[in-house]
Length: 288
Image (tube, rainbow, N blue to C red):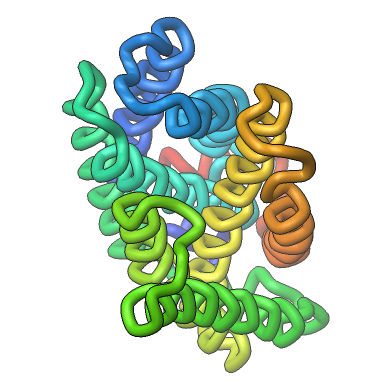
């Protein structure tokens, strides 16, 4: 079987077109939110979360997704994994907007972004050549170390959210936020983040070919959103909404650890010696 660089993801015009559409919606939504923050109709501390979220999306997620879609390097395994992670981040991110933001003029943009992100993930995973992608990783890749970290984070998140829910429902405990906000965050984490981290961790531990793209999705999505939580925690402290350090000491260390794990995994992906070709060679292969 030919396992060249261009066959790591099977040729498909659907996924790139969907990804470009998603990128356009992300830019419009985040830029609009920053240009007209008064259009958010939430209470102040929730508006603060959208503020930090829009900055991270516009200044980090959108440029990285652009790079992952442009140039000859888009065929390289690392950039393919990055593309998967960024699309996964978009799906998770816009689920928060769609279900969590007060009804505002951006409502349809949230729905479009979420639907297109899910469709893009389906198109990518329907065309990915997992065996070739897995073959781009060295046997020295710390797969089990990263997998163990992912499973530990998934277990910790599950224990925290389920524990808070049980204490509130059965023992009258106080939640860290309103029941509506808690339900939103806990539901999305338990239905999106925890399954992705668990499935990716288990598959990566076994070095199953699917473990590499699924783990990349889970780690990159988690790392970006933990960055948002860290930034928002800092903004909340800076604006006097909460006393120092707020939740910064919770989210920032976890963001750093998750980002290191994501970098370690994605950076371990290399093209095979035959695929380390010049840009002109890659372009000629692409158009065959």
